[in-house]
Image 1: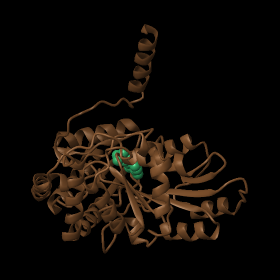
Image 2 (image 1 turned 120 degrees about the horizontal axis):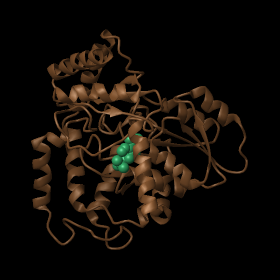
Image 3 (image 1 turned 45 degrees about the vertical axis):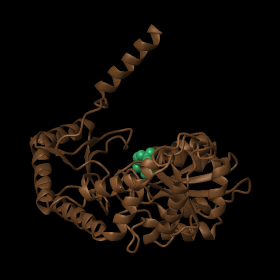
Image 4 (image 1 turned 180 degrees about the horizontal axis):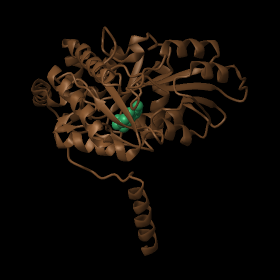
Length: 383
Ligand SMILES: Cc1ncc(COP(=O)(O)O)c(C=O)c1O
């Protein structure tokens, strides 16, 4: 026992010496780092709508469902919401999962076998990477957003198994957008299956329903599975997978991270329903968050700062070394602006950054104040 504890202490020391140590800190200051893109978590109307739904719901299944979905954890509320979510997403069916992490683990382990090959963007989220690892597939990592590399890989025959192409739609750390329509075309041409993680785009993109980039690019019906989460623009927690009916039915029968876990409680479903109501009623929120983010990017551009190819609410400012990113974030926090440094291994070595997330309830003045503060903090750290 003691040996292991000492080993862990040494490992933590090493992490500290590399400026990569993490600790849990309570939120403080103006939120520029959570994924609450529409500002729902702070919206009193959202809170009221959830509480009203909770009050109106009666019966033993109205709050909790402490069993797995395949046993007593399934309620008519889950099924009604899944039907609504499939309409929202524009697919035949949908299935609620406890988290996006579990969705990705489940989708890949259920649908991909060890004889299959999967083309995966170099910047894909850890949950996709872990799902692919667990599936035991042959993984081909292609350079971020490199359409040419995707086509080149797809041209290679793979008679031993099926081929899949997996990508985030809006990338969580670079804030840029995958060419989903081109991927869908390539997948069709080369008989591959497209899987999309739409976690950061749901609620923000999509002119009509606001259901994500799969809607914006019109690929909802061309993907084998689309993962979306409630922990970002919905301001809540949880996730769902959308796709063809047969895929969803197969997941219900074979997806271990869906089967062997407790059903999401109805308590959470009221929040999701209220979120869907709000997306419908207030489409201007998604327009506003994108306009504010564009304003911030413009301010940064004027200051000569690199925001990569970001589009939408995530605005990265790449600063290079971890200590530089940490010091700048620290300055901003001292000014009451909650901006966090993102360091390896979350991002590639040498690309530590501020990952700023813009919300629909920020004001123009707050955006301008942040832009000035970032510029000033960088100058003072570098001087
Ligand atoms: C792209 C992406 N997919 C999946 C997840 C996991 O979702 P969840 O937080 O619901 O587990 C995240 C982040 O948390 C993410 O950024």
